[in-house]
Amino acid sequence: MYGKTTKHKPAPTGKPHVRKGDTVKVLSGKDRGKQGKVLRVMPSKGTAIVERVNFLKKHTRPNPQKNVQGGILEREAPVKLSKLQLVCPSCNEAARTGNHRTESGSTRYCKKCNAEISS
Image (cartoon, rainbow, N blue to C red; front, top):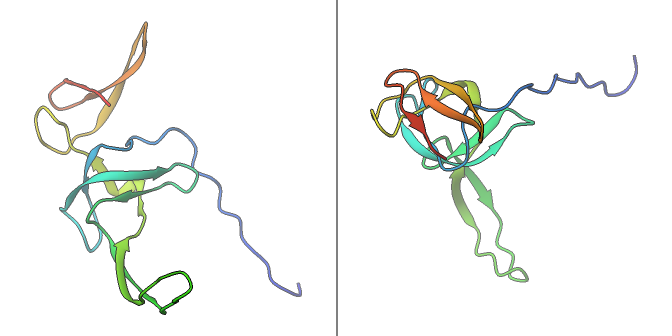
């Protein structure tokens, strides 16, 4: 009743469909249609950082002790995984993926061209 209350969002369940190093296409938002390489995936938050997508500007103050010059920095912000779709390396199109179970483990495959996606 008094004080700060927080609403806890449930953590996303399951394994993300994209991995570090994959090429993905952005499906919605201000960067819709852009393609980039996944730099980092955060499954607990359900987000990923994609190269040259979703830039934000951060104003920094100069700090001579840490040798920081200051100014306006541009860097990538996280994008929700639901807004990303994997680009198949063989057919070069954004496609949904599935998993094949093999004796060596599970491998991803493109549902458009049925080709294996190696990572």
